[in-house]
Structures are given as structure tokens and as C-alpha cells.
Image 1: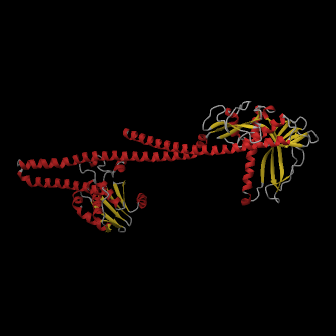
Image 2: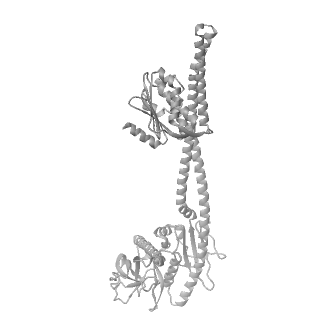
Image 3: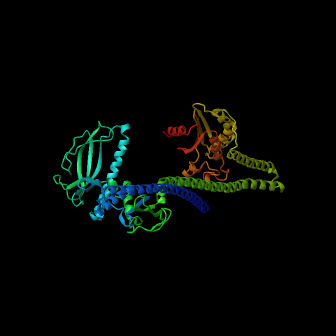
Length: 597
């Protein structure tokens, strides 16, 4: 068994090595694919960065009286839109510099609105105020959580819109809506509110708890006939003061959730990763000197998965942007392949278990064969020793002319012992042919009643010597398609055992039915161990059966009947032992239950 376990350890190590190599190679290929995808996305970001710089130049050209505050807030808004889309695996940040190389703003959490920054009394532009100037860290995290819920509700609404044509208009949808109030004089936000709204198809609108007016209706999608009403609304989070509808100095605007928190479009975890990534923060106050279009590494560790580069001013513009890029293709590949890796791991363990089970079964068979070989050698030595000893003794008597009057008796004993040895050799040859798998049965129509009569005639001398009464009852003849000679050998072994292990003046009762044949004698009942191992080679059923044969009778009979498609069962009865031959195992159990009743 020690060799068995050592072999299995090598098998397990081989499977583990193959699994590790395959998964490692797959992980490398997947990481390279993600790295290339991330690089292409970054190249798109560079193009977007130049477009943002061009937009900044155009807006400032349209606002000749714009102050530094407006320039900072508008730049922060552009950076918010620039960094809005990212994930845990790919993140980007940036900072905007003016013509003198001074930093105007860098990407951060901002209170962003569309056309909410009052300018010149009648005009307004997108703007974003640094959130750190108004909210605490705890309040920022809470608002980020609601922003993630808002993005999730938007995505669910988009999914419902996509399914509209297939499944019809949805009955309802929910959304998280955020609003901000800005003072038109000092141009500072003073109130932020997050609402949870429920819109139902053809629903009756309720009063908006934020504005105090009727919630109104909504035409959802490109279906003017499908109208939704706001049937429920509640303020779930707020900061600052409420909006005064009668105040002319306040402007209400809808918060641009996607631009408030970088990477929030991919969920709260993605924003948290961006927030905690020091490489994406802390841009220098002065624009680094560069040569050429890109500066390469502008600080930190520059690798093939992270870098900082400067985007040079576009033509006619004095503004520049520094980009910080950080990606994790290995993490993306690992997350992408985790279920495949788990499935392959389970499959590998199943294969390992199957192989180890097969190996263990093979070793057990080898051990059983080795044990059978030893038993066979010992049994044959024992069985041959007795007749050879008898032959030797009688031959010596003949040679020394002892008891010349018994010469004929000695010769008969020698011939009888050689016949026993010949029978034993014949049984071993028959077993060898059956175990080789090359035995070809010559099947024909065989009558069990006729075969039984022939065998009983041959055993008549033995039964008469022991005064055994034999009775054969035939309810209906059992007709089989079988090899007559081999079936006859099996019956002979069973009948011989019924005679040899019977008592003097005993009985043998044979019952033949359409699907079974039972042979019952009045011998000594078998123990549970003997019933369990009675069909094994060399098992003699205990001390009561020692010294008569090599324990091949039942084994040979069972092997022959199995090859013929029959079943053999042994059981104890009230008076002795019964052997049952059946054409079907289920019918055999039914026969036994019937007999027991």
C-alpha cells in the first residue's frame, strides 16, 4: 500500500503541474489581451483629452470676462467627464495647465451640474465645485454610494428599454435622482439632495417632496403613447439647506452623477480603487518640461501598465493636460478566468479521483491476484501431497512385496489417487480457459430435467453408499440455451457437494421450475462467513470440508453458470443447505421469498 500511495502522489503532482501550466499560460494570454485592449482605450483617452482642451479654449473664448474661479470649475467639470468611465482594472486621471504652465485643476470628486453655473446674469455653463470644500469624507462616501445606486438604476432602465420591443412597456421603474442648489450671487452650492423616485405606467403622480409641486409625468423612450407618473418619491440623503421656490437668488440644477465621482460608472468599488490609488493624484503645480509630443514618465514608477504623459497644447491653444494612467491586466485576467479556473480545477480533481481510484483498484486486483496465486500454490501443494503420499506408500509396499495378497488393492488405490489428481488438473484447466476470456460456448437447447436425470444416474452409487434418499420434483421443465457439457459439469459439482456434505441416511430434494432449479440437502448449515465466501476459489466452508478437495467445486460451478447467463445462490434451510440456479436474479429472489413463506 505504501507504493500505491507514493504512485498516487506522483499522479497528483503530475495533474497539478499540468493544471498550473495550463492555467498559467491561459492567464498570460488573457492578460496580454487585456493589456492590448487597455492600451487602445488609453489611446482613445488621449484623443478625448485633446478634444477637452479644445472645448476649454472655445468656452473661455466665448466668456471674455470669465474669472479664475470659472476657469477652475469648468476645467474640473471637463476632467470629471474625462475620468467618468473606468473600472477596477483600468483607471485614468489628469490635470489641466494654462499657457504659463500653472495648474488650473486636477481630477477629483466634484459637485457637477450641467448649465448650472450662472454667468453674466443670463448665461450659464457646466461647472464642478471641489467636493472636499463642502462635504466631509464620510458625507462624500455616502454620496458616492447613492451615485453608484443611481448608475445602477440607469443601467436597469436601459435594459428595460432594450427589452421593450420584445416584452412590451415595463410596468414601472425606479431611479435615484440628485439635485443641487446654487446661489446665483456668490455662485456657491448650498444644498444637495438625493431622491428615490418610482415611476409607474399610467400612474397618478404625487407631490414631489423636494420641490413641493406635483411630481409630473414622463414619456419613457420613443413611445409617446406610454406615459409614466411619479407615484412615489422620498428624500433619502441631503446636505445643506432646502430650496426656497420663492427665492430669486437660487438656481436648482440636476447633479451630473457620472461626472461627480471618477469611475463611478463601474460601481462603488471602482471609484474606491481610484480614490485610494496614490499614483493618480498629486499632480505638480508646474507643468513638467517635455520634449516632443509625449513626456514619458513624469513621476512615480513607469511600467508597461502604468505611466504619466503630457498632452501638448492643441493648435492655437495654450492649455495642456497631464494624464496619469494605471491598469491591472493581470487582475482583470484573473477575475475573468476565475470561474473557468474553478471549473477546470473541479474537473481536474474529478479526473485525479478517477485515475487514483482506477490505480488503487488495479493495485488491489494485483494484490488479490498475488494472494490467489499464493493460495493456489499452497492449496495445490496440499492437495497433491496427500495423493502423492498415498501413491508413494502403496508403491513402496508393492516394491517391498508387503502383503502380496493386497497387491490388487494397492494398485486400485494408486489408480484412484491418480484419477483424483487428473480430475483436479482438469478442473484447473477448465478454470484457466474460463478466466482467459477466450472460451467459446457451444450453446444448444438443453433440458434441465433430462440433464439432472443423467447426473443422478452417475451419482447413484455414491448416494446408495451413504443411504441418501433423492427426490426430484418437476413442476415445469427448465429449458435453457447453454453449453451442455459445461452446464453438466456445474450440475455435477453441485450434486457432488450435496452428496459429500450430506449426513448418513440423509435426503436430497431437487425442484425444477420454469425459471429455476433448487438442490437442497440435509447437511450441516453454513456460517455467515461461509455463505459470503462460498464461491471463492479454495474455500472449503470450514473444518467440516477439509481434506476432501481443493475448494474448486462451487467456484467452478458459479463461474460456469455466470458464463451461461445464470445466477447461483446458496442459503441455509431448516434441515440443511440449498443451492438455487435461476435464469434471472430478481426471479431468484422471488423464488427464495416463496420458499421462505
